[in-house]
Image (cartoon, rainbow, N blue to C red; front, side, top):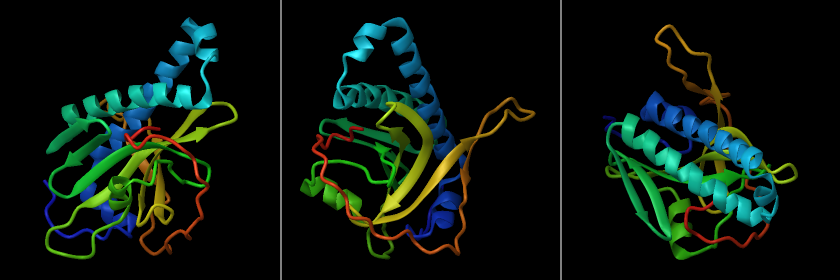
Length: 208
């Protein structure tokens, strides 16, 4: 299990400290949720079509959290889960804390600006005991209402995206396992610019 300091502003530092299994857990949860959505639409098309955008996102999030919980608890050492609404967080060891959310085209995530979410969105200053707060999720196409690529992101403040990496599914190797590899991770790249977020009213329950 990892133990040491991590620079949350450096994607390479975070990815190396995390290791492969949390990335695979997020990627597999997104893949399986995408399959759930396809099954739902093919077996109950009329019911699925009745959803509002918020309604289908709430449905998707419930499936996503359920898949992510199974993946983390089964495959990631040191996992613990806090699932007491409105808080639904996944911890890996004593260092990493995840929330699960959809990412818009500008990589913003939406939540009520509660004190709890604002505290989560801020990274701790460098110190001996730190908690690196990350958001695992997927890109969401609001026009087609489809689940896109799995992503992992960090921010320091509600509207300040530090970095986002996409998790691309690899072909099964000789061991038969599929992994999700971070794309475009370069420790020398500058941080992404701060983006002003549009207000989107959604419940801060780790949803969407």
